[in-house]
Image 1 (cartoon, rainbow, N blue to C red):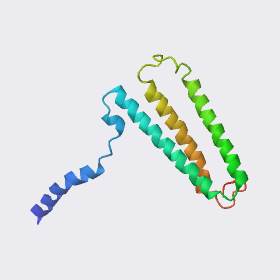
Image 2: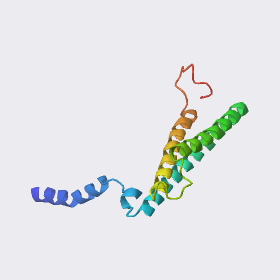
Image 3: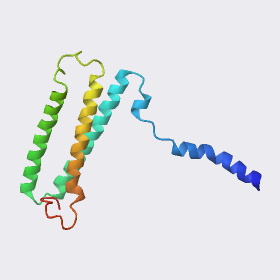
Image 4: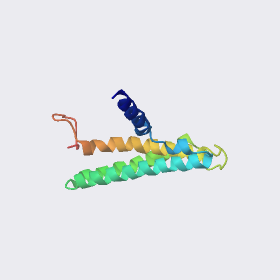
Length: 141
């Protein structure tokens, strides 16, 4: 019996180890700066896609409140202007091709992804809703 248990444990250990192994990120596979730049661009694209998904879901959820929709659209336009200005402030010499070096596309994409993820979290308030009794929830249902 002991030998059977030992055999089962020996056979299952590699499977358990494989199941617990974290998923390798794009950056862990990248061997060149170009590959790292591409990973960062994918990360930003994913964040932007999530932003668009959440934004559209809010528009759908609140479609019966046109005043809110107008205000949300204005806020989103202002946020896009803020995002672009924030990036310009962080990298004021972006137009100078070699100023920040070959790492710049990665840094730029990662910063855009970070700002976009922060915006997504803020927008999710309208999808997640307010706590019962929150007198300051405003338009958040």
